[in-house]
Length: 137
Length: 78
Image (cartoon, rainbow over all chains, first blue to last red; front, side):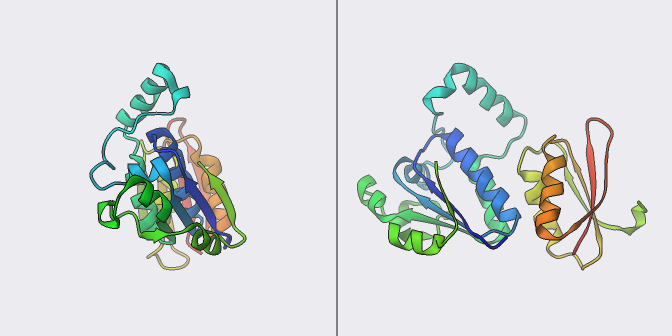
């Protein structure tokens, strides 16, 4: 199980980030190296001052989806940020911000939550991904 | 399974996927090879998840029981 799992996170809504965090944690628990590359609105959700906030849900969730998500959260489901923290505790999880998206959003590395390990470009991401699977969310 | 042999316990009841596996992966790291870990979980997905996780990591699932609501797994560290 040495093949890496490489997640490109684009969407910044809580449901998609939750699904991505679950994939990252599951892969980390199997001992796979996990590379997470944050672009656009996903990167925006990792801002230090916004990570704990409400990032809404994908449009297809609708009001029923909202109530299902809220119920799971009330039942004690860990937030996506907490799930990623636990995944990082296991080791092998590296989270990088896309440098172009940093420019797009007009933010600096100091604006990002400590969950983010650094800033890189797409070439570096693909070099680290190697022959591993790449998933876009 | 002799309970006296179990050295570490993980209570993952009420936790949703993938936290039972994540907590177990964290707990098993410092254990000595050959020692036993017990996990309690309520996530129905954990039955297939623990089987797959053990197959992949090389730890041995030595016992698996359920009372309907709670699943109990006993894992021997590789």
